[in-house]
Length: 132
Image (cartoon, rainbow, N blue to C red; front, side, top):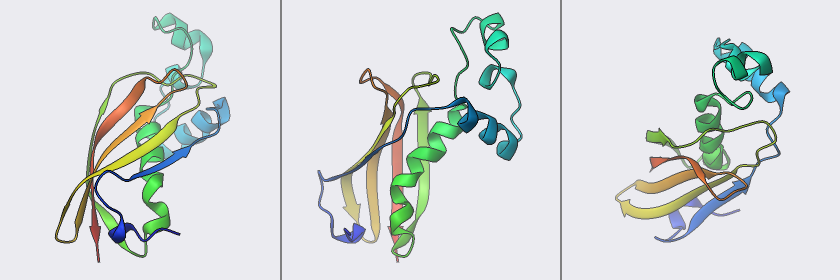
């Protein structure tokens, strides 16, 4: 496994998730307390003008942080800022990516994004991983 503190500028962390399922969103609704029906009920999403149910933005953001889970013994996420730039629908396949753009002392600064199967970024932002 890669040691995060040893990666160089320009290197990336990347993984692809399984297609988004209704059960993913139902489980997230329960754990987050966000029961807005646009995330779980097709008819309610359509009433709201959407083509179908959409994933919670925070579900997508939380998944993006999974890129750093293998490195929990090396440090922690110190700062995490994102912007939602698109919607995530059922059966979307997201590729999560973190590009190292800078290193400062113990801080690793990444551009992060989640990209759907149409190569559209649905979440993008910056993340600082602080090494111990």
